[in-house]
Length: 307
Ligand SMILES: [Zn+2]
Image 1 (spheres, helix red, strand yellow):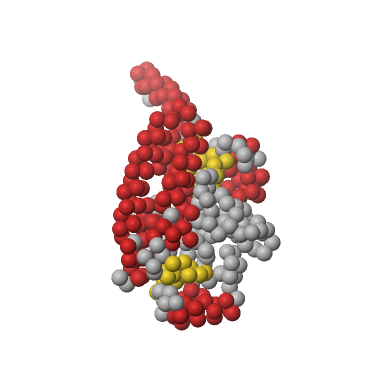
Image 2 (image 1 turned 45 degrees about the horizontal axis):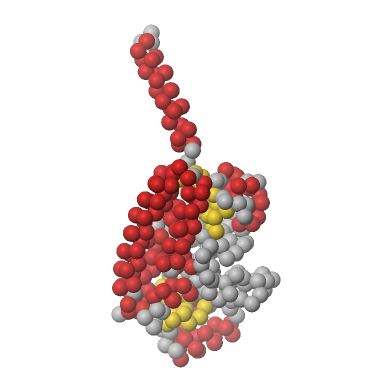
């Protein structure tokens, strides 16, 4: 069949357009985040200017995301690496940064975005020695479970995006302002919904909930772990059960990255209600975004009080 000249012209125009369109797509800012909560924030602020990959899927331990072969090429191509900080990612990020051979995202470079910048950590230990296994050497890194502190992470992400791509500042500013307005409205809602949580005592597996407890007025009574990252001993569990009974601790929180067995045993022994709560989006079903996750946490916690 003979090709029609007009059809040929059409093909030439289409091919030409593809070449014009492609560089705009290729110019997306490539962002890698360690955790899913940060990925959600980057998507909200960066909009269609960014392409975001999270190393974690949501069910992992924030201190030990298991390595996948895809991580190194992802990190090699990244314009920005966005992380929690306070050495939260100590067990996997430094090695990955080295393997990436990407000078733009190394610590100290503008492509290294530490979201803890501007946050004062709680529970800073006297020694920053990792040898005893403590995974919170610079204080508690789980500030993202306080939605007010998440706003500091939002500002750090915004600043990094603007530094990387100043020509897109207006877009980032309007995206950020829209998201902050939405988040502020949710914070007011959560504070009202969480009123029954005031003074309620709870424990959790890992020391994950300090900032959350502070924000919503709960009493963080203790952890199943002996210290952050250190497995419990039988004696610790026994003492925990005795003191929980004496002090009427009513909720046991288990994070999805930890086995249910010990928290379930403590719940049985004390009568405290056992709940599984995500620590980042994707940790349990129906928590795909940061806001959905916080919704889930507040609602589940309030339900667990039985009030
Ligand atoms: Zn931790």
